Length: 91
Image (cartoon, rainbow, N blue to C red):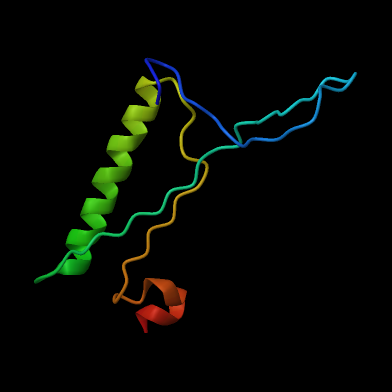
């Protein structure tokens, strides 16, 4: 940094401008989020599910308040409780 809102760039090489426009475009395609929480102790599965429900309810309210679309898909897996095994995990 050589001053307020100024930096020195050295050694950069480029090409002269072309006769055509150059364009870089991005598109908002959504977000993906993963969270991991440790919920130990007695009745941990019930507590973990309650925490997940509370987080999802709160984020749904925040999205609605910001006039954003709700989650398109949600998946909660309580590891160690057989959730990843689907119906076989409950046998």
